[in-house]
Image 1 (cartoon, rainbow, N blue to C red):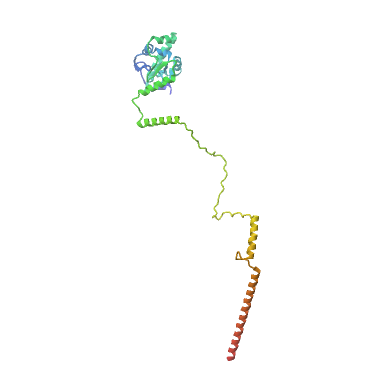
Image 2: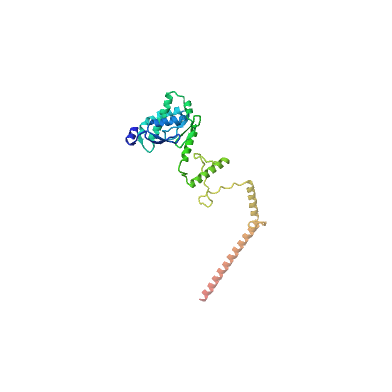
Length: 290
């Protein structure tokens, strides 16, 4: 959005006709023209010529010295000087008016070739001053420290602590834990994670013995001691079959068994012959009687 678009879509006001607050001393200034601000700076804030100070035209906190401020004004705020008549909630008109008056005062001293050190000693004023709107400090001071002081002043002027009791307790507990962690520095062991791209050997599948697809166990190889013990066991069984620990003649028993079987066969055939002959005799007697 350009400056012309903002001007055509905003409410306008007189640039130097209002009541304002000085950013360096927090005093009320009745502004009727640009000379109202120049007179205020030259009479109460001559320390600004030899100090570091915050930019009155910036919304944020920007700390710089006299030469840096003049360069900053030309590169940043001079391009938007047309917004000095805009009336909006960002207070752009008073900010640009204050910055323009300070620039005019600094350039006047520079054009007249006046000694800023002698000018700063004319008026008895503090060398350091901070408000919630801005501040200034000696040129040898740290700009970041001055910016932090302005932020602290802004925080003190708030209507109260906007945090709840729970948030306050949590912040106090967090500070205590941080202090204890710094006091006791214990090394933490990190778990080693296996790389995902590492090659892994396939896991062998172990099948149960009850499975029908279980592989048959490999035959156990016999040793020379097993062969010798097997020969001795076979000789002992041949010497005494069925009755361990007794020595009997196997051949003699076999012959006795054969003779017994032969005798039983012979006796059985003789009885059968006697029965057959008796039947024939009886049959013949019956025939004669008939």
